[in-house]
Amino acid sequence: MNNLLITNLVLILIIIASASICIALGMDPIFVFNSLSYLKPARGRMEIISDSENKSLVIIDYAHTPEALSSVLSSLK
Image (tube, rainbow, N blue to C red; front, side, top):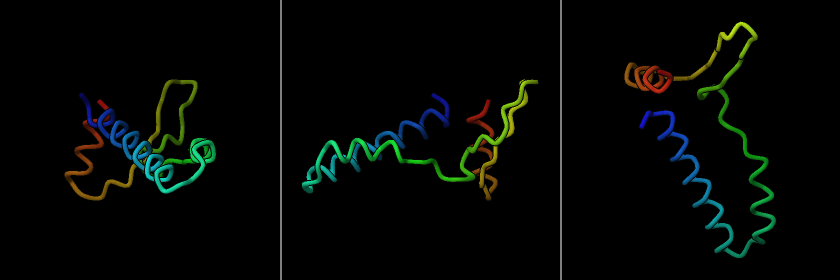
């Protein structure tokens, strides 16, 4: 399993946990689930800024340590 897939799985689990907590605290489930459509990924985190017709792909990531950069590059392979 690659790092990108693991990262996405972790994000999905965080969203499910957050929605569950909101509902457990008494929020209307319909409101909670409708609100999920407003979620946006963090800017600069594996952000696709260009996907052109010539099949080139430009991605920005704010990785700022050697380990983070290595993880980003591994997940893109």
